[in-house]
Image (cartoon, rainbow, N blue to C red):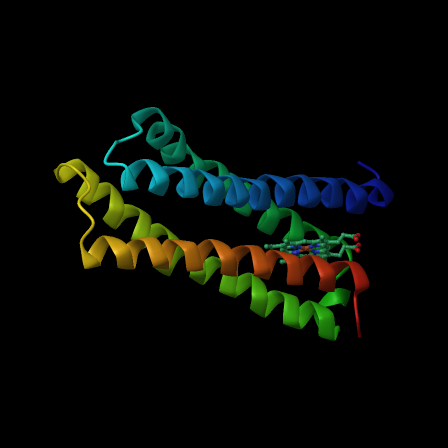
Length: 157
Ligand code: HEM
């Protein structure tokens, strides 16, 4: 492929992956809101839970393509963006997205699944804490995406 087409190709992949990852995060947030409403009424929405179980994988694919296409753009441009302020801040925010996902989102999701596998979901202080942590995870993730998009489009230097 000609070099002139390489950067736009990576950019198309980058933006597609962004839609996939940020979109999945929003859907996950909405799905959790519905889940907690069902749980409040003492019912267990198995169909919803099955769909929710697939979302982290979709977001993971989005994250992988986002990072690979980002590295691809850096390679094509010989790392020129790496010297710019917007990119350095963006990179720190990308690391926060990854940390938030691994340390909060994934862990809290697994904790909740374990509790659900053990039986009915009873509203203990532990469950209340998981609920609050998952809400914080989603809100922080969406805020970080917005900041990253803002920086990437305006490219302040
Ligand atoms: C959550 C993660 C990320 C999001 C939401 C994101 C989002 C975006 C957006 C919206 C653009 C603007 C495209 C445009 O207006 O032309 C962009 C550009 C760019 N991104 Fe990312 N990005 C992410 C991760 C990364 C990573 C990990 C890298 C590098 C390792 C990277 C490298 C780049 C580069 C070099 C550009 C500039 C391309 C150009 O203008 O030619 N991005 N990104």
